[in-house]
Image (cartoon, rainbow, N blue to C red; front, top):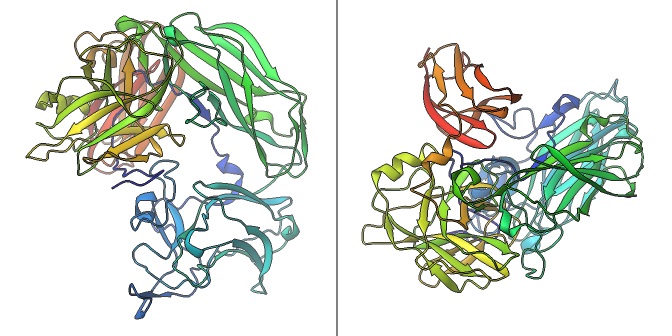
Length: 599
């Protein structure tokens, strides 16, 4: 069962066709972190002090004389298993440290629990600061948390209170410069359940580093207005990866900035260069932004007053204006991308999609269910031809499904015929081949919001259908409806379901390759895999290798390569023996083959 802002995610391994990211994200500058913790990998709490153990209780609050650690590492599904600690699964599948008094191994008494770092040496450090993210929703009696410091085993001193924010992770920044030059520093996250049955506290992505005096970073650039609610039917501001040209309208871009330095920074502005199919169309921006305080974020929404005019790629190159004081301008720019689609194979069959392009998990239910995405129709000159969906491993042959189109209130507009999945369909999903279902009576679309979905219709055999998800979903963007009563919850991740405004020929398999078939050799390999392919035109190329759990273990981003034959190399000597999936993306189109590593 899935609750609000939460989905049941199972690791998956494949990609949707025409994979062009709708937004960019700045990568953490890990080299700057002289201490960092993302709580991934084996034994992620090694060296941390977990404090005193806590006693498990029965449902009436009676102690069971069983004592367990107050702090564990887990993911959103594990945090939410009891339904009282709804940690958003963002980034999808990530792990974090948490004190959770509701989920196994607790129901526990957590009157005061603390998670303490190993000893840290600040002797030769100046301008030290810490960045992290926490989830502290304050539900059911839990309240503020605290970050504290101790030097040389001495008393604990308060650095800052961590308040409560419902429904989302908080991005926090702490000034630790008062500890510059000191040895044996320890930092502690402290939380209390208020002696009640509360939810919990979670922390992730800790980075302790020396800060520059002036350092503003661009940490996200997203097409659309992220400040507007998805439920606002009067606004067309949601993010898309693909957009039919006939639905094109004025674009906007949301840019998120963070002051990662020591001093306040007067941000003079943000520039946006709009590029369509490689040709600059216009330059927009906002000036000034204002003074950004240390550790703070701000989001600027820039209206471009420009509408795409042809099928192909749109790139928005966003940058912090060069007049802004900054000691490290290397992270002052990002790009956001959108693919304009049109009729036919070459145009992408007028696809409208909002997922991030790569599958990172799946959504399912033991009951009949519908998963759908909200999409904004801006022009009434369109006909909904059909709906495609990428299904995930675990889907079973014989499952009965159909596409479904609904209005903003989930009232039925049209469906496809019922379709029974074949073994060929199951084989195809491993290569990223979506299922396409034509609508029965393709309707003309009215201006406004619609929900585009795929429905699993249970039968006497109760065969499963899993739908791939990829990328985060703004609240209200993606929905799950379960059971005979269609119980509604909103998902934190985006189902890979999309609308087509022109009819797809036969299936979608041909869309997964727009270049000469690639090969990998030697296969099996114990040292290196060579990837050979031939480009029809200059293209951006990305090669990725995934293990059986769906975790990416190798990537080789080559940027733009010229026309002709190419040979790339991926080292595999340190990987475990087994089967892997290799994917190659060329200008967004994706193909995949299985490879084997042996030792």
